[in-house]
Length: 162
Image (cartoon, rainbow, N blue to C red; front, side):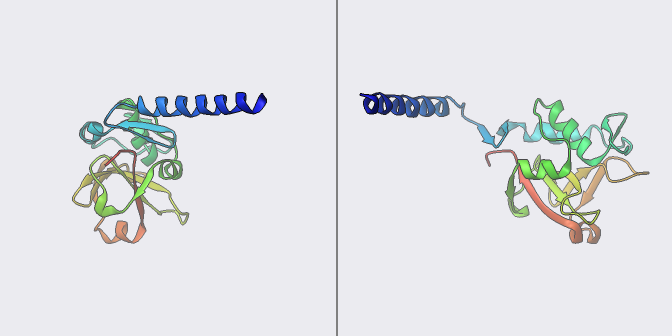
């Protein structure tokens, strides 16, 4: 009797899982803890451009001043999504992609402090990204082809389906 009940419970659980998965709307992607709409890429990039010129501030997460991961956190949050605070956590939370596959709105990561991932920017296309570079500087565009960034490039991640 118990084995029959267990079989029905197992079948019920499988049906429930299939139902929940099938209820995910088209255009959605789930990556670890995050769910993003594909059409938000342009909005993320446009939002980032609005903050060009905002000064760098260590531990900054607002238009009063941004550090690199505070900038990406703010831009994504401003578009309705939560991503982790630290650059290394942002890198680990997304799906790793090669740079040739990166699209505007994806994130690019660099090693500037001797540890694996210590800097992040928002990919803008054509090997350019928007970031909050360092003390004394402000949010700006940079090129991954620049020897400084090229040497320190770690990888790209996406939180999107394509």
